[in-house]
Length: 606
Image (tube, rainbow, N blue to C red; front, side, top):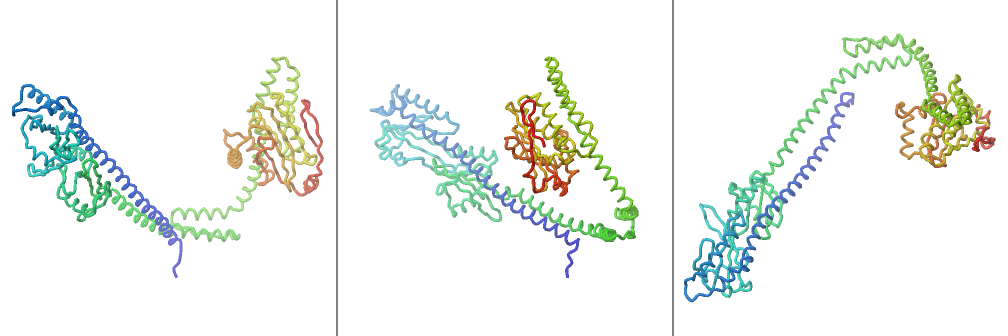
């Protein structure tokens, strides 16, 4: 039966880890290839469309020349001349020269090599930039059709296409050229388009060319005509649309073909590139990835074997020894072999077993000392800013000769610091903490007359013992962060409530409060090591309550009914303590009495 040991587990984990990586890579590779193909198609379409528009713009500009010339005064005069003989007079010759000059200017306005000719049926002559001559009216009439005409001729062993456009005046005479007053022909050859194709190819395109079924192909001058011809044969079988993105296979190579139809000329602008040029980096990346996966698998198998032989076996020996030690067998010993790390660990294990009893006793005593020291340290933390503010108040009142305020502040301040500096007990009655907080609040009232407070403590709760200086930080936090930042009247309410077997000491304020995120952040901060920038007050109280009363004690935060923040200091009551003070199952019978402070605020005490 197959044994699923540590070695096989590690190998299985390596394989399981590699499988999702492999699947994710395959999916990512397919997605990337699809996006790349789509982006490449869109880029090619945009570039072909832009180039097609450039060609169309030149052709449309050339097409507009006859319409401009028909309205020229010299051309209009030329078509109105009727001769009795075949010779021109001096005025006619000058008119022809002016027309030739205008034809030359019109042709030079474009960077394409073009030709303009004006036919006058009344004179039977044709005028071009190069001169004026007679023409055969019947041959001309047969040549005239609507739109651009394309004819082909051989030049230096290659096909060249002549594009011609006839414009008649009046325009209605197109159906019967014999009735025309003037005929203007504009023409250009395909070498102009070849020039643009060469520049287009130089900008990074592959093999752009123009094609029209039944007419021919206009190649760029460095084109692979044989391959292009094979591609055209494939495209004729597949059929072309106004815009096409196709993958065509010729021989063993696949080509990505892009075609855009020109609405002006009816020719397709076609460009193609080998698919391997685009996919080659992806294929190289795939090979590298698969090699890496195989290498990772081999490394994982070798690593698993080394872990099994050099780590798992020594660990199993240690585990068996620890189990015997757990059962109280202090006579267990390991036999270290060699000088590797596990041999050292075995010798240290033997030494540990010999001294374990002594260490238990030392650790136990040390924990007691650490806990006692930490309690003393937490209890001794005092915020000096409060002390400075009080003396600043005394100084200000003394300058104003307000002796009563100085005396009252000094009296409350002495009571306040007498309590904070003479704490030698680990626990104090809650009534002492409440009295101490009254001194603190009276000091704050002198600084902020808009502050009022109420204290409602049950008489049974007054006798409960709590760590000293746990209530004042809660009240100080409400004053400094809740009441003081706002200009409205500030209210602080302190009360107790017995919930089940726990006592709640509640501090409410109507200050700024906290959002849900702020409350959660403050709660999390109490569980982490204290940060200097965040202060010690609330964290101090929370930690001390937990040290005294356990994990169920500490601080909680929520929204106050007064509108600000509610801080709850809770701790569990012992059964004897709760029954003795009548708190457990009798909290509703608690007796409260209210006192009135000198400024009119209510102070409730038991």
